[in-house]
Image (cartoon, rainbow, N blue to C red; front, side):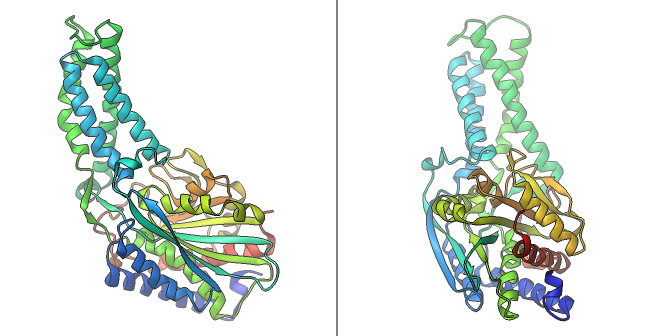
Length: 413
């Protein structure tokens, strides 16, 4: 049975739950404001959303985990400082020390941002964050499980996205990463010439490169101001819309007295996604055995804002992680049931919670609706409750409902 066949006058019901979601997002924003990873505001907002789930879920709980909120994007200013020091040391001939700083910066950037590994987290202040887990049980034995998820925290503002939009932020990122190429040419070239701790005095390309590396310092300074740690954005779209899309499904089931026979429906509101998917990672680690016991599909909903960009993300974590093909097929078919021909796309920059679940070896995919440029509101003060798009929220809930009903009918086969 399709979701659209589950009740009479489905379109008006769909509008009802879209209104529920929009009202809920606005209430969270106005009552609790920005929700820094690991903050009291994040937890208070989660508790408020838990109350919304009490009428439709039998089990609701929070699970805490440790997080170092500034570690994830902290690599940008810290790498900038390291490369600035390396540039000066390289110019005066301290090539081996300069190379060590360059290698450290590259490892920091790759592990934290590209691989989302917490290897450097211990150098930053620790806080406690939480995941909310709500379960709507089936009437019979649990034979399959669908997890619907959004993240409840919000990001530190990205200065360059706010000041200049996608072109400026892309330019800053490209120029700062290009510095790694220059740095390796200079430091490795100096060492290859036999000058470990003495300045290379020959003429030619290596000398020119060292001046270029030094001249790059003003560009590297821009990296020090990439994130504004004094301003946490509201995160109405990213990702309260995802939270309320997931919540709307179990609310719909509960309000309309629909209970599947063998399919457990779960809602997970993760904490600290913006700190490097830490909530999803904590959940996957804590529930490994549970996730292996029955067929489980994890659907992450992230930033349901831009109607023309609704898509299934089959590749994640800047394209380095492949999400589950069967879960993507499930979303694709459910999208058709909802009247959408959903394209398959890759997360070009960054990651979603589904990447952490896929990394852990479980079956996951993401549904998102965001201009990947990125959009001007992305991680900026423009992501407010006044910048919601009810049409996109309604579409996401429709697809989420159809996905849930389809999964109950056929699983991932």
